[in-house]
Length: 250
Image 1 (spheres, rainbow, N blue to C red):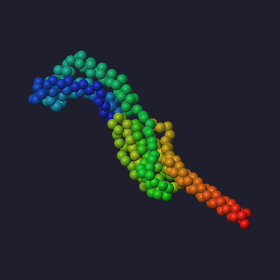
Image 2: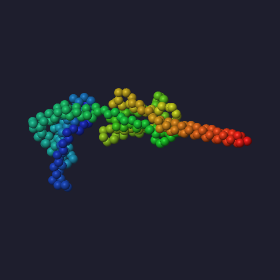
Image 3: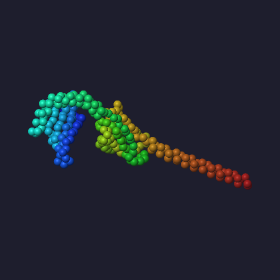
Image 4: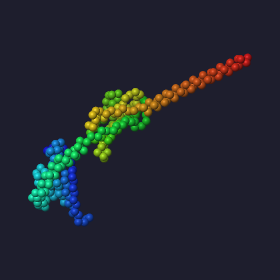
């Protein structure tokens, strides 16, 4: 049937223990398997005794199959119980019609767009070697494509990337690094393609802090020389006044 996904639904375990040590454990586990076409759902009910499979109901066969002497005896007994067989058929229809569709909609077809941030790993100035990191997180499903652009052109050299990592909350994260020499005026962009996005998401590295730093330095230099000029004019004016005062006295 080419099943592409295993889904554990409506799991029920019943335990019977005679003592903490040397006891007996009985489990009944219900699960299903289905592919892209949910009408091909296969439903199983497994009866397990002391970690050994005793018998199993297979919806493809419409009956129980036993393993071992006791398992075959139990399977034959279950197959002769019309109410139990009817219950299994109802469960198959219920799983296919409701549970599987709900599971597919809430999990398999779920799409969450990523958050993206671009920043330096450590401070560096224009003309210096630096490394930028593009962090992509909180997205689902797992498949994502992240690339670097410099002035609109994709670059693949000096690029290092992590694996796609699970966050443990049905979302994922991914980090990619670009090593480069910082250039004033160059646009460095992280582009993210994900099934949750209508189009590529591009986040440009914000050089504001670096530009403000240089602007502050430039303004400081201007004020420094302006101060020197004012001081020089003041000194010259003082010297001129002093010379004029001495000339008047003579």
